[in-house]
Amino acid sequence: MTSKIAVDKPGSFALLNGDEAVARGAVEASVKVAASYPGTPATEILEALAEVSKEFGIYAEWSVNEIVATEVAAGASMAGVRSIVSMKHVGLNVAADAAMTLAYTGVEGGMVIAVCDDPSLHSSQNEQDTRYFAVHSKLPLLDAGNPQEALDMARDAFELSEKLHLPVILRLTTRVAHGKARVKLGRLRDLGRRADFDKQGSKWVMVPANAIRQHRVLEVKMAEAKTLVNHSRFNVIEDNASQIGIIGSGVGYYYARSVLDTKKFSWLKLGFVYPFPQEIVERFALKVKKIIVIEELRPYIEENLQRLGLQALGKSELELEEIGELTPDRVRQAFASLGLANKAEEPEFLDLLARPPTLCPGCPHRAFYYALNMVNQHVNCETKSALAAASASTSAPLRRRKCSTRLSLESAQ
Image (tube, rainbow, N blue to C red; front, side, top):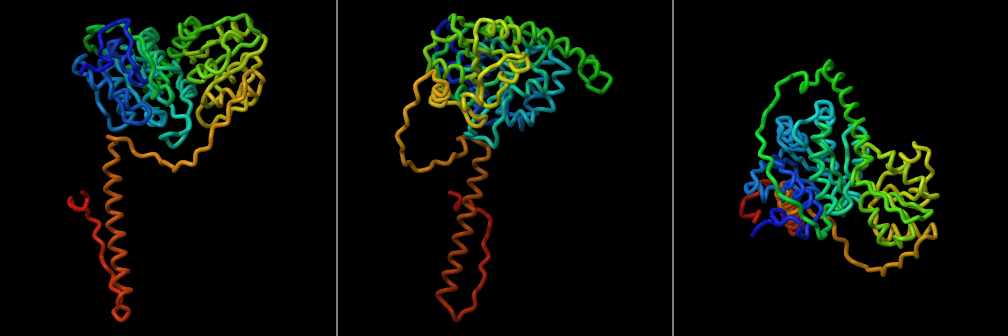
């Protein structure tokens, strides 16, 4: 059966989640190298690419960690081949050393760093907002709000990467990565490129003398990016001649549209968010008298508006924490607090048993924890047997029984 992301019918539609959409966008852009380290909610990106790797001539690998995956993709890109590396937000911490230096060296073939943030920590040890890593590293960032945007941004990110000669970060969040939607497919193509590495050491080897020079080159690239961001098709104004304007990014923008009468407000959807699109934001601000910002996790957009001297109602006024993911009900309640929407109905309380998260099927750590669990059961069983034997014979001295921690194949089964 042909994979959904391999269908060669431009203009047709497919039901894809955000991760699969990223993979499809990469295939449409003629990606040839894909690397990753598994981590929910980003795992399915490489899984989808690996499934069609032979069909499209893609080298796909699970790397030993995220920094190795990033360097594998970077090596291909330095040789002029398009590549993608994918990881979850905490994986970007592991890859940070490589990513920061790549901003200085730049790339030749388009390179996309797909990062899936996990608001509400469904399968993570912390919450992070990758938009701030883009600021830290000075790498352009696209913020997808649904699977269609994930596909379009993934495909266009390669073009942007080659125009700026920089890796481009594509950010998804859990609901975008795992949510499914009807996605319009684009044209498949093969650029037919051959790898050709320029061995000029001053360009790739970041010893201090080279690095300081490349830092100045990076500033020139970012100046160009600031021009491109204000004309990006992913930053869109919808002017409804309203006095109230809503600026949003990611899935929160679409939640707001789902709970409000869209025609009563003007809208600015930000998809290309770093560098911050100052020009289009200021143009939008001139059209409205009041600005409301809706965004998940940190107040990135809100803080940038403050730097521009623009007043906006944000996290505090909407009573939205920087903790946890947005939901349609939370967004409705936020706008209801401003008198702009009806309050959300109180959900019926269901006294359900807690279901703690489990390790994902196929996770390399799963067999290890299974073995530990079996050993633990074996040791507990031996201990209980020893205590039972001791209590049955009070005259006999208690003999310590040695519990073997070796797990035989039979006991494991």
